[in-house]
Length: 550
Ligand code: N01
Image (cartoon, protein in one colour):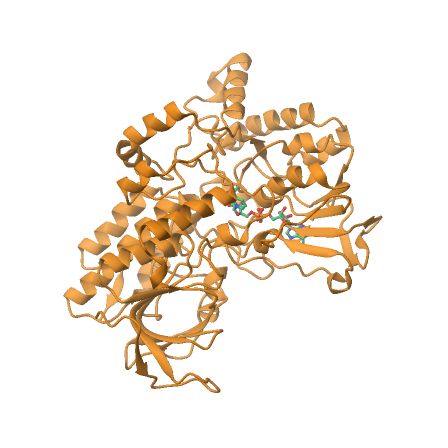
C-alpha cells in the first residue's frame, strides 16, 4: 500500500498528454482547505499513500481566496478550529472572538507546518477530470498541469461554499475600470482612495467588505437585491485570563460542543414570546441582539420554526434597523420583508447599518430599480447610471454540490457526476453516491455540512472515510458506493426534515435557488450533529449498511 509517489506506466494515457506516467496512490485528496489539511494528517497516520492536490499556491481553500477587505469568520474562534490535537489547542492563541481571514490562514499554515503536512501536498494544480476504471478498480485523475494520478480512492475536500457564482452581467467585458470578486480577491492590496466603488451583493461577504471599503473610498454605492438580517458581531480581543480558562477546559468544551445540534456554541431561547409580557419579550430580544451570535432567529424557543413567533423577532430587527439608519427610505430598503429571519443564512457585522449614515455611501435598491447592464463607465439600472471606477461582485457560490460537479468526474459507464446529479444530488450521509465507487465527499450533499461547524464536520467526515477505507482493506474489499434505494430514502429524509423548518420559505443558496437551473431543494441534514454521528457510526458498525461493498 505504501507506494507513495511511485510512478507506474499509465494504462490509458489521455489524448495529447505529454507525461506518459501517473503517480500511483491509495488516496488522492482534492483541495487543501480545512477539510483537505485534516484529511492529509488523518490518512498519513493511517499509513495510506496519499497526496493532496490544490489549485491555489497555498493552503486555505476559501480562506485563501476570500481575502477581501473585512473578511472574518462569524463562528467564534474557539469553535472554528480543529479539535484533533490537544497540543495544538494548548499552543495556539486566537487574538479575537471572531477571527479575521489573515488570522485563520495563519492558523492553517501553522497546522500544516506543525504536523509537517506540506510534503504531501501539490499546489498550483487543479484537478480537471477523474475517470473510474472498473476493471482495475481505480480512479485515473487528470489535472491542468498534465500531472496524473491513479488511485484507489478519491476524497473530494473541495468545500461546500467554494465554487464562485461568477458575474454574468451584460457589458462587463467592456467595463473600463477594475473589477473583483470577493470569492477570488487579489492578494495584492487594492486601493479605494479617491475611487467610486460599487458593491453588488449583500450576503455575508458583501456585509463584511462594505463598511471597510466605505472608510477609504471616495464614494461607495451598494447594489442590494435582497435585504439581509444582520446584527452586531460584538467582536473583541480575547483577554489573557479568558484564554487561560479556555485552555484549561478545552477537552470538556469540545466534548460539550459535539453534543450540540450544530457542534457549535450558540445560545438558544428557552421562552415562548406568547407567555411573556411586552417588557419581558423586549428584554429577551435585546439580550439576543447584543450577544454577538448569529442566530437572532433563536431568540425564543419557537421562533426558528413558528412563523408567528418568528414575526416578533422580525419586527424587532426592523425597529433596530430603523433606529440606526437615519434616512427612512434607506432604512426601509434594508428591512428584509420577504422571508422569515433565519430562513436565509443570517449575518453578523461590524457597523454595517451605520455605514449607510456616511455621506459617501449610497444604497441602490435593485428591487425598485434593477441593474440593466454594466457600461464602460459604471452600472446602468433601469432608471439611473452610476459612474464607477471599481466594481466588486459579492455574488456568492454554487453551494454544496458546485465544487464537485464542476470537475469532469465519470463513472465506469462514462456518466458524469454533473449528469447524475442534474435533477438532484444523491448520496447516503453525504459520503458516497450510487454508481461512482470509491469517490468520497467531505461535507457533501446530504451531510450536515453548512448547517454544522464546518471544522468539526471536516474532522468527523475524514475520520469516517479513513475508518471505512481501513475496514475495506481489512476485509479484502476493493470498492464501496452508496446503495441507490438507501440514498434516495436518505435524501428524502433530508428534504422532509427541512420541510418542517422555515428554510424552505425563502429563496437562498441553501435551497439552490441562487443558481439558474439548479433544482430547488434543501441539501443539508438538519437532524443535528449528534444524530448524524450516531447514524453514520451505526452504518459502519453494521459493516457499512446502506452502502454496496464488493
Ligand atoms: O453569498 P450570498 P456570500 N444581481 O449568496 C446577490 C459563507 N460566508 O458570499 O439574494 C444582483 O449569501 C444576492 O442577492 P439575492 C456564509 O455561509 C461566511 O455573501 O440573490 N445581486 C446576495 O445578496 C454565507 O452565507 C462568511 O437576491 C445578486 C449576494 O449577491 C455564504 O458563505 C463570510 C446577483 C450573494 O450573497 C455565502 O455568502 C462570507 C445579481 N445577478 C461567506 N446575484 C463568514 O464567516 C447574486 N446577487 C462571515
